[in-house]
Length: 278
Image 1 (spheres, helix red, strand yellow):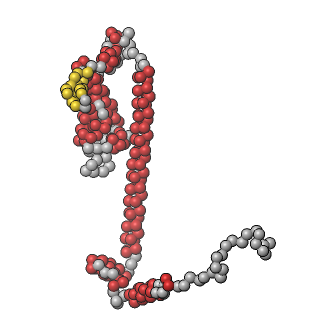
Image 2 (image 1 turned 135 degrees about the horizontal axis):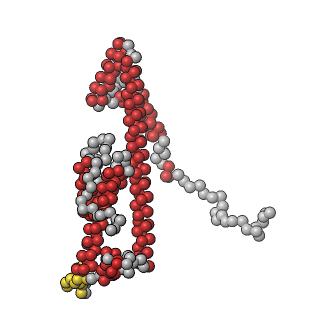
Image 3 (image 1 turned 180 degrees about the vertical axis):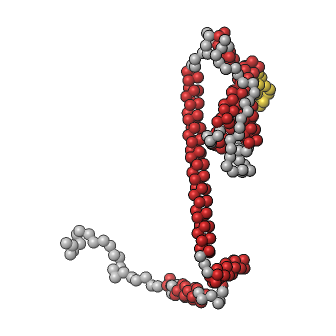
């Protein structure tokens, strides 16, 4: 009697991961259930995320949250179903071949069925190792080892990207929490400040806010208000700048200045044989 557990025939039921906020694009319970079902159908996390219109980073982040133990177990079970589907597709291609196009002088002239004998032998050795693999699955050859190394690099990159995305998400959540805390403290400080005001000061404060709101709604600009104390200074500074710009212009006949003639008709460099050289 085999010690291995019997393969699952149905997806296990699971309790959805609890979420703190109910967002329109969040991982609600029905979205989690749809993701697990799509994962079982496709065997691909990326394809399942596209099916439910969510990101892969969000899926991996959800799996790490507290209370996600049942969700993670359903995830693994769904991958087992997806792997069986991948094996079925590979076996179908090994047995029935793949239709490939046939070109002649750059023109498509028809199609043909291409069979992959290596894929067929691989499936036979791994699905029936006692008959085709000398009692066990055959070890990898040089090509298989190269492919495994490539997959390891790919998986390592995906793992690093996942950790980086999780770190960014945690940092964003921390920033949001800090901003929320600061806003709450500022609101409490403003409330305490209003409570400490006398009735006369509170009335003046409310009147100030009302006037400020009316000015903003009317589009008030102090530099266009002749009654504002700084209106004259602002326009006086503009006049000074215009006068300075006019005075800085060169005289109109500056291009007609005569070029000073040299005292010597044909000046040249003094040589060693010239008189008076020291």
